[in-house]
Image 1 (cartoon, rainbow, N blue to C red):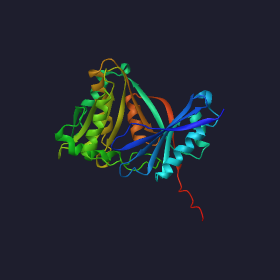
Image 2: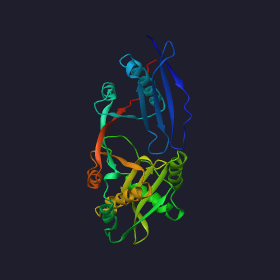
Image 3: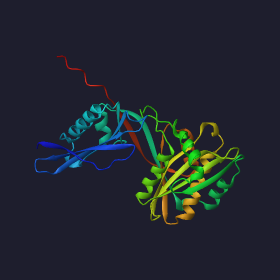
Image 4: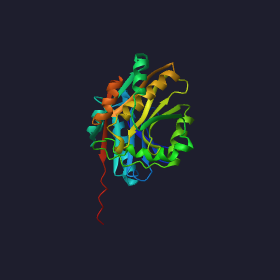
Length: 301
């Protein structure tokens, strides 16, 4: 049965990206699949597009995925993008589809979960109270307080060298406005943002941070958004210390919360060691794929 592709208008737009969308349907108007292409617009990432493509299992192997992919790749190339990335589960239909359409594997992510019921409160408290000479822990909820805004923004460069293997991910440049906007996005979704930082007592600058987002009703699972330590402060156990404090606070403040979720690049040995030491158990893996775009060759006249 012939398939038809329709470009859609996606109202989702923010200061760092916008999306293009397509729907594939049969001649009776029944949807067979969809694709979203996120075009990043911030300096340092405006070469990149991120693809999310879904085809109904009953409609696979009939050309819907290829039709959607062709539209997305064309749009990315016309917009001057250098790379398209997409994520899928290992061994999934998407794994085979992307590798069969010119994408290459660039990153493996391991997802893990910490059941809060399994956390020994006494043991986690011992970790948080261990002295780290020259440092202290500070925490806040929601948007960063004004007193910490400048140094917290500066600490975001701790993520610049986060292992991304061969992914052409670019550099995400932070300023205070973007930090506040990110917190506002979480608030508007009805979720709670909790931040723990390690402060260098020599100058009251933030040496590292960890962020946790919790459902607004305090149930289900929370999600770690990022943990980073500035290069000049690494090797002192600050990541383990901060993350333990985030766990302790989540368990005490949200007694109905089921667990905490995190994902880490397989090549990020230090953070994987922190997660393992704190009791996070792997649940599944995903593969990041990348398609390197070349400009369309000029047509001779």
